[in-house]
Length: 146
Image (cartoon, rainbow, N blue to C red; front, side, top):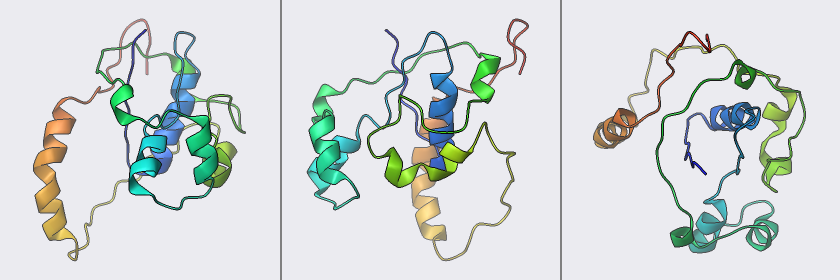
């Protein structure tokens, strides 16, 4: 089994990517494997918190992660509207937009970063750059055109 850990911003993009990967014939998707761990250690009062903690692993040390290279499948670009079997138990609280979608929305670039959090951006940028260097990036192939 190959494991991909995927984070994305904005949040609805990572959920759309989950729906995309769920369309692959060779992939099993697990929604937010660290969410239970986060709820346990943060003691945050999120919608459905107790239900999430009963339903999933919440020991972060027990959850394995690794990076790998994978092929692109055109079926990953579209999915039927509505929930999917791979949704986490919290989907009813957070996924209304992706449940209405049938694929990725057109990307709209944002050209302005507000000045107020600029020091935070400067502090986070080196960490982002390190993560981005490890990112799996789209690459068209002859067998699977994008």
